[in-house]
Length: 208
Image 1 (cartoon, one colour):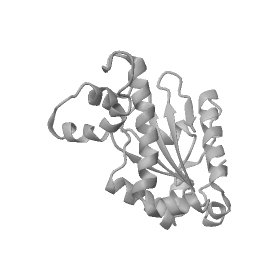
Image 2 (spheres, rainbow, N blue to C red; image 1 turned 180 degrees about the vertical axis):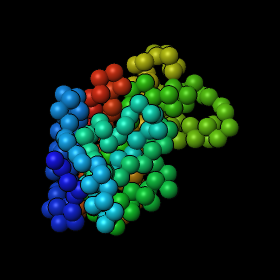
Image 3 (spheres, rainbow, N blue to C red; image 1 turned 90 degrees about the horizontal axis):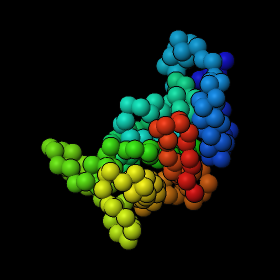
Image 4 (cartoon, rainbow, N blue to C red; image 1 turned 45 degrees about the vertical axis):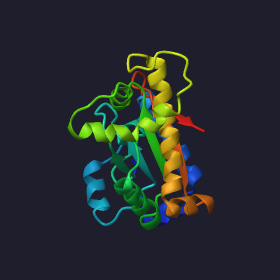
């Protein structure tokens, strides 16, 4: 039975501890050996304060229940979601709150295979505010200008490469656009990492 994390327990964690915990959590998710939690009790305990381990930036895709795929419970992680899992001012501010103010030790950008936002960006989709939103993914497409193959949303290999590039660029942009988190990472107080979720298997691949 896992309990809500306390401030003392959070403070004792290292970024490496949290990364290892997320990896082990995904392994439990894959095997079906998930942690037993009393959610009713956790809700009451979490109401007294929150001391999460990590903040995760994920796509809005409904097929990725972020807490579930890492076998995490109430009060365990902050989750920010936007189609295409890119950073912007609001998300950066939320991440700074999660880390600098609330003590989270890990920032994780979680992309996923078969991402509809990535496909739409590749194909130049235009619809309302979606058009402007997809410009945030364009740098990942531009980075693959030398790709030798069909550059369309129908080409799975190209979509996968753009998806990975988008995660890596987002990690890089978080460091560039947030001096607060860059300084914390330089001091070893947090880690900023990227990962990809496989829609077919539920497995998460962590990127170097």
